[in-house]
Length: 455
Image (cartoon, rainbow, N blue to C red):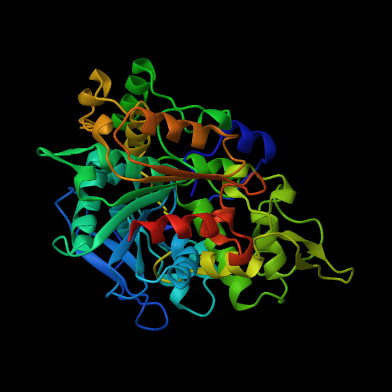
């Protein structure tokens, strides 16, 4: 979801945690899945060998809109994000812009998650009682090599499929570090072919390069010394990024993501029922009064409860004065929309369980957006940044305090980009653009004319 949650903000604001105790095994068995109706299929694509367990040499795409659309917007989720981040936004965009289809990209890491428990009637026991299949870091040395080069090769498979041999326009974008990934793709050298050559536009949502995240107070960690230390930790077995463990919902790579999907699942299926999860939450995070399933999700996602900008929305507040408190919407992002997205299913989901630590290193180094010696030493082929010649759209919330747009302007000034559009909504937090109601979503309103103009 976020580029990189501030460890300082999380660890200073919450404490405690409940470690999940899963059964360690291989990747979950793939299940075919399609959203209701034929217009939102979840489609697999075979990609190159990555050294992982059987079944992991594939990526998937959630498709929203008609296959006959002449323009495809391919969206890449941010850190810990997954394809269902974009389902609601995609529906709004497809309804607003005739001739556009949206493809939401899921990285190969999604094959490691066991989401089968969400196909049943009551997933809490499957996950919180430790019956799910987890990916053991000690058996995951392959993930040390799942960095940006691997991700971009996989993404190239999807972009070229979307192009349909050049018969469709492809616009590439992303949210947070997904926007950074899109920019890296545009500058990447694919054996002599610049990535941007096959693109009709770039869409950056609260992310990017060239100092995009400076305003967050947690700038990128990309000095040579920092990179060496991080690579040494990965070589020592720390192959998955554990930043989300700072939330306080468990110490494993996947713990927090499971809790959030559980909260969304119960809030979506039984919003007014008494919270199933509240009695099992770590005491430090447990609401002090009995709440409904919807209210518990609200307590985990609403900015009013003190969560960092990275992982919060503007939704509402606890309501009622009875024995069990409910939830009242008053913000731009109705909780029911968050619940629908977070609930997911066996697939696709909002939260990625196993984010490779190597991918974090590579994306930090990509911020310079130049063919530096450090980038080359990591195998990052960022050779075509100054040659970008595709229109660009950049949107920022309050998250980075203005540096998303200012960094995008620097990219435009130092390239051949013919024109750009910029939009800002300081009333939004980092996740609001993904889930906000369409009438209140500045991203939808400002991205719509940009996409329409590409035709």
